[in-house]
Image (cartoon, rainbow, N blue to C red; front, side, top):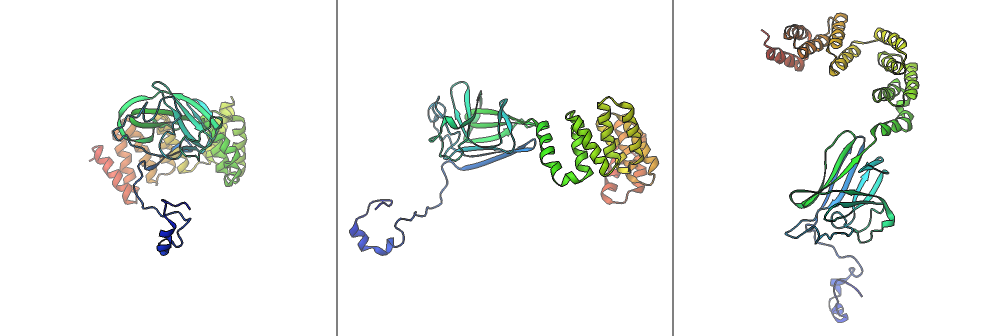
Length: 353
């Protein structure tokens, strides 16, 4: 009989009630703090979630690198069971391709460069059952000196819309692992295989958004033209006609593009023209922005919003007088208190009397 410690048959006979129903059952454990507490960190990079699950050992006055964590040996990159990292979409690690999935994360520290390992086994205990044959990817990185950190941690730094650095920090070292995504290819694949095969595939907006993304990023233009045509077939409007015009211009068909833009203006709403004006303004095309906002003010003279947008364009152009004039026109027409307050404060800032 095996329990937590040996006990004689005589003792069992003397105290049968104590052990009734307990032999062969796991003994309950008193909850106590883990010496290396569990932790979890995640970050959305582009369109994918990157998640790291790990345990955090402390230095506790010990020499870490080269002693507690030996050089030249596979290390579990944390404590207790596998440190794991998961990716919702394919990524590139230090420039090398890695499929979507969850991986056991291991490292081989040295005094110079480190080997970072993404292993297909993500359910083992530490690195004790590590098998090189199950490696999905190995990359080499260069640690750098850092301020002392008592508890091991992972964090994300240097975030962009298509990349991030997964940073291991412990003791006085920081180990950076660069994660990048081919965002344009991923978005395009998702448009083809998921987005346009779902509810969006029944709407003009869905096809127009996919076509507009291709236009903006100068990719997949031939198929984007077909998507634009499908959008227009469902509901021809200012937005999809402008997208197709942009695609025609990319194809070297400027006269056709100009004709389509002219046609789009006949279908434009106040909101459409206002958005176009902001597109010009955000691109630094202030002359075109002012002309667009002026047209909206002429076409919709009772709308407070057209004067508010025109005033903002004048303000950004440095024309304080016309900015004050148009903000004042907007203030006379606006009804909601929040915008009244904002415009009033803007006029005071500009020195209006």
